[in-house]
Image (tube, rainbow, N blue to C red):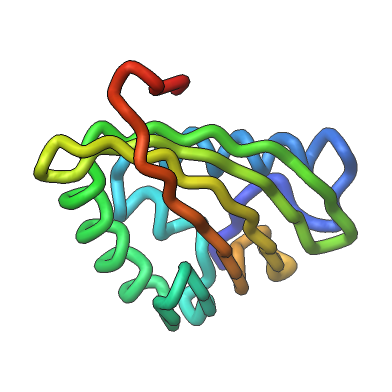
Amino acid sequence: MEKKYPLPPFTLETAKQKVQAAEDAWNSKNPDKVSMAYSIDTEWRNRVDFLNGRKEVADFLKNKWNTELDYKLKKELWSFSENRIAVRFEYEFRNVKNEWFRAYGNENWEFDENGLMQKRYASINDLPIKESERRL
């Protein structure tokens, strides 16, 4: 059985480790690597997209990073319980027209006993910015 450490139940320290691992993985912009943190039957809501399964997640991320160029993400632990973590985040990217954006949002995560994310619900808002306004 595959495991993704740290495993629940989370402590403050292990919840922060899980958030940092997610930030590092997403900043790699490697869809296959990122998708391995999710259970085979993971359930996602990302804005208006509803995804089911690790393969759909990998495909979604491939498309995301083909259109969200120079992507850079920062996540922050907001709250946690035994097998759940809530984060706030912001990321910046430019599109193919060279228009820059900062996205803000919140995610709610639920993990299985092997530390794989079973559920990810993300609410995200985009703000157009000038390149000179970038912070990340």
